[in-house]
Length: 310
Image (spheres, rainbow, N blue to C red):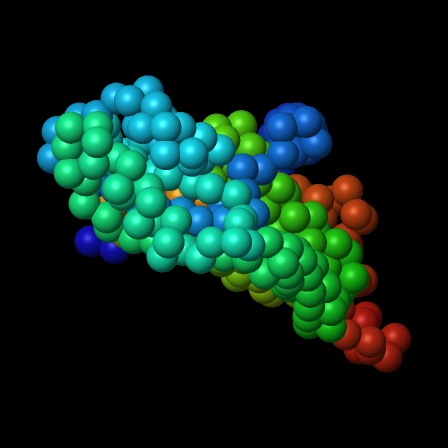
């Protein structure tokens, strides 16, 4: 039995204004969070030393901090990493010590707590490298949006390019706002997830826009809102199947992939959900507001040919 054997007839455009208000509220909340709380930069951007430790039994963070303070490592940040047996220790960049020396001092200090921790990983990034990575990451996102604008403007029409940029920017900002709200660590893997969200959202938007263009050519006497509704309904099955299968994989990563890919999968899960929503309500909902009409997509023709059109 074929899924969605007949096209649904859901009036998505009827709720485009309420959906637009929801998107505006989410964007405002995300921008306010980013402006006030900002992101929690990981070691990739902030620089410093990160040491992940594993204990056989749960350990109290207060005892860990006390041991580090006695070893003159009181500036270190200590937090659980998933469970109470997994601990992350971060230290600001220190030009006088390398990562190996600092990690050895941390391990020696924590052996006095009562348990012998297992060192699982050590990462070190200099402050200058962290700043460079942050700038390069921001430029990568900016160039991606510019490339999308140029591509969609050439393939479709400038009104479609505006809708595509609005939808992809909408998705990226909301993902960043979510990370700011929860205080999740923002590192290179999360940046990669944000860029992947932009690509996924654009792909979904292009599929819808391509069908919108086809329907505008087929339904020349229909109202633009009805044409857009028809296109969204025809691509709905593809959107649900693609988003659903992608979410299954991401949920498996989230629950079974471990702490290393936890934030990466979180960013993509939020991005897929928001991207699916935006391709239906934001990218498509903006087209009537931008005044897209049949004349924008019809190829130039002679007057005699226009008179013979159905």
